[in-house]
Image 1 (spheres, rainbow, N blue to C red):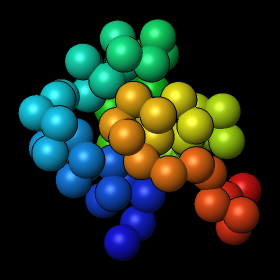
Image 2 (cartoon, rainbow, N blue to C red; image 1 turned 30 degrees about the horizontal axis):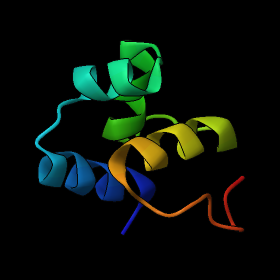
Image 3 (cartoon, rainbow, N blue to C red; image 1 turned 180 degrees about the vertical axis):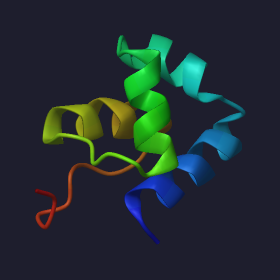
Length: 64
């Protein structure tokens, strides 16, 4: 499962959409949409914010 697939699945489980995630993480909605679509890779800081908002684990050691 890729990062974007994990985020998409977690969003669905939480009943959230990318706009709500952007608000929850105080992030740019366009950037969150790109991350969720898999067109960009989140930074470690972005990953941590998103993972925290979605109740996922911390940044994997293999994350760039």
